[in-house]
Image (spheres, rainbow, N blue to C red):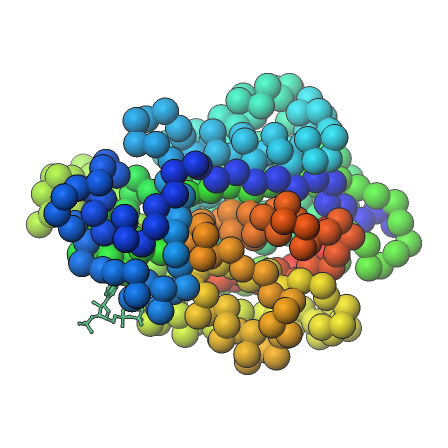
Length: 351
Ligand code: COA
């Protein structure tokens, strides 16, 4: 039976590290100002989110989202020892694409020099759940024989769309830039616990306006009708979030999704090496671990270093701990995500 294998993993984060103290003094060009720009502080951020730092791309227009993706993808291809020319499908998950259209998948394909005649390029959204949604797509494509080398990328460049003022502080302190990638392919095996074992994706659009970024609305004419530099008018330029409601929904649905994944596969925590939750808030992950009775030593987090990198969090976290020697090829992983939409889901796979 054909099953989907993880052939390679990779990630990339920009070099510039912004700690919580420095963040307070940044303006929207990410220059460090003498005057504090955001009324926040390290104690508040660490106590409420667990975040100590995040990475930002340079603000000189030299780096696009697809550049972060290309670096993560190149590292995943290298890890799998597969040439870019062998990739026949790209699935690109992001909420911060290079431009409105075309999607970032084709831009990545071009940057990697992948043959234009033999590579389909998909762009998916699903925000913080993008990676698990993409894994489900990749798994279906591979098991049906549609594609043989699927490059699944989660990549975000969020630092240029955050509000560097007290009004947006709840959101601004959370997000960072980064990318992660998996290369996936088929293997003929009778082992039911090999490769991708389980994926389940869910959504509830009733929560759509709990966490969103409008930027524009196509129902309007003109569709973009505010002075983007005027704080009285430009709220649609920045992400908006009802933090407490998102927090509660995230904990609830991540617990149910995780427990359902175990129940439907007949597995328990003895079968799982690592729980990799989406990295939105360390407090969410601690609560999920407590309620779902997940052994603490099996939880992998990276939010303290990178903040919330949305579609990139799961592959970035796995690759971070793989490079540190904690996660290893062959380990069994249960990943659970939750994000804007609301969207959420879980996956169980062997690394
Ligand atoms: N620094 C300092 N103070 C801040 C702040 C910041 N960055 N952000 C908000 N505050 C203030 C608020 O203005 C409020 O002040 P007030 O009591 O004077 O009105 C106070 O802190 C409490 O705000 P609240 O929003 O109730 O805090 P919270 O405990 O809910 O924490 C979040 C805020 C954003 C950390 C938390 O709600 C959260 O993490 N939610 C989930 C977010 C998430 O997961 N998003 C991504 C999903 S994929």
